[in-house]
Structures are given as structure tokens and as C-alpha cells.
Figure 1 (spheres, rainbow, N blue to C red):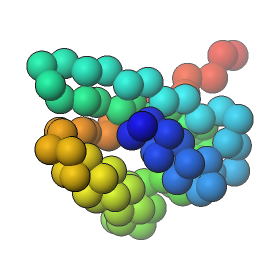
Figure 2: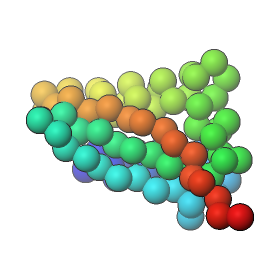
Figure 3: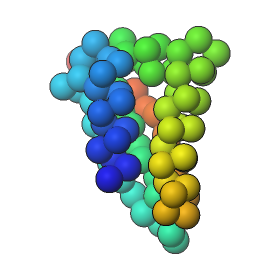
Figure 4: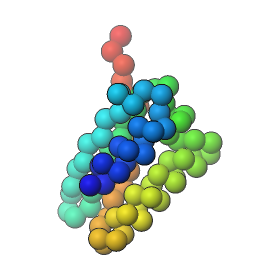
Length: 82
């Protein structure tokens, strides 16, 4: 549910939507969404001074707040094979 929302938002922002990977990990009632994007898309996700990722997190937090869940979003760059 949270994964689908994050995937929808991110895939509409990046240049390489086929490289977007999201894993959902639940630990002690807290959900962590691990977002991996291509190196060239990191700037599009983070944005100037972190504004875009902050906005994405606020949307996810607000959606999770309806159900009193704690959700965090971590961003990583996909390691390209040489």
C-alpha cells in the first residue's frame, strides 16, 4: 500500500523508471521503505536542498498517519556493475 504510493510518485519523477526498486521492511511495528534509483536520478529525487525527498516523505507520513503507522523512506543509489 505505502510501497505502491511511493512507486507511483517516484516513477513519475525519474528518467529511468524501470530501474526504480522499492523494498518494504517491517520491524517492531515500523515500516521502512528502501528506495533505490539510478545514479543519474538521485538529483531528481533529492531535489534542491532536499526539498523533493522531504515532500515525498511528508506525503507518505500523512498517508500512514491515517492508520497510525510509522513509515520511513530511505533513498539509495543503485550500484551499477562495471
